[in-house]
Length: 167
Image 1: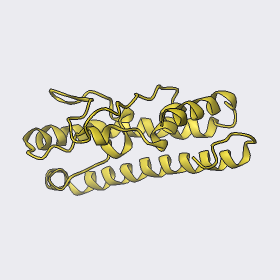
Image 2: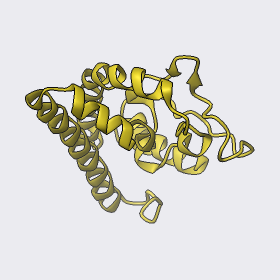
Image 3: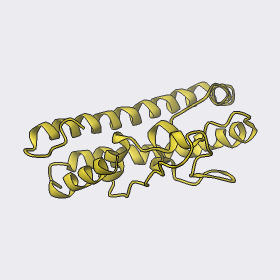
């Protein structure tokens, strides 16, 4: 993944105007993620602290290609993954009160995993209209990120000599 991170960062640096739409999508997604984070953390503060099957493990702390594109579009560094860490060891970002990273900086797979007890708690403690708004916001975030990745892939096909077409 290191070569991929460097390649993606180089692309954004070499073609800032071409990637401006991706940057805008990433900024919009980050804004929505941060807006909904307080609601999610309200629920995880109750459910996750009582969990006996913690899902915050090393395997989930890896940033994939879409995470690299997202963070690079935001002008942020991508945390380097330690390949020596055990897959099932505790996540390197877990602190005494949960994740130490802002929700928008976490790997997508990690931040949007809602286990059955968490979903159950959200549904039982949230009024129906607030729950529908919550779900619509999650859908919008996913749509923005998906659109960002699709736009990135289209740009790769258009930009000559990127060498990233088959990433």
